[in-house]
Image 1 (cartoon, rainbow, N blue to C red):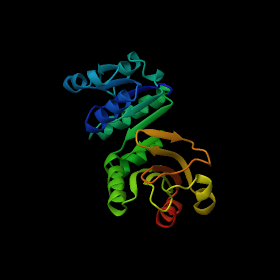
Image 2 (cartoon, helix red, strand yellow):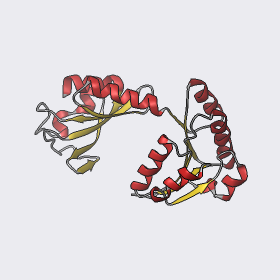
Image 3 (spheres, one colour):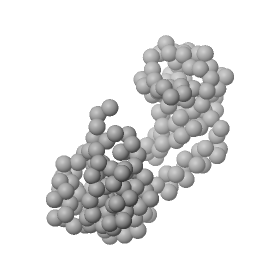
Length: 219
């Protein structure tokens, strides 16, 4: 795995969760918040931490923020600070700025000022929970765009002991199997001759309509 450098600005529930997970995955993580107690809580879950205001241009520059591969703006309810911070980061030339949006209007402004990815944690989690509730086959669901998603599906008797070439998922359903999880092991970019066992988890990419058709008819 190639280690990347991340900075997380704003250490509320969302920001601290992102920070912990990135650090757990072995990446370099700088945790930033204006409140000392929040920064102190993250010292064990980050490579570096700093007490700084995300709208303070000089403070961000002194932290070398322009050198990070990704900066996640997770500032909570202060929409104005979120917008100003994002604007500064793009002016500094940060390549990938991901921002937590509070609402539709916040998202519109973030799009205008060049945020590279806008996330809605509550909305995204709502979509995932709804997918879990309506299908026993779905283990996880990631919405990539309005049309395309990645789903994790539990292999049923219908596909067990068959190879990927037997299933021919791409030709029949227009979907792509990106990987196969079996217990703690994961097979990334499986071969056409690889076989599926019952209870394997298939990581599948495709258009939402095609994924639904594969789930209903192919699984």
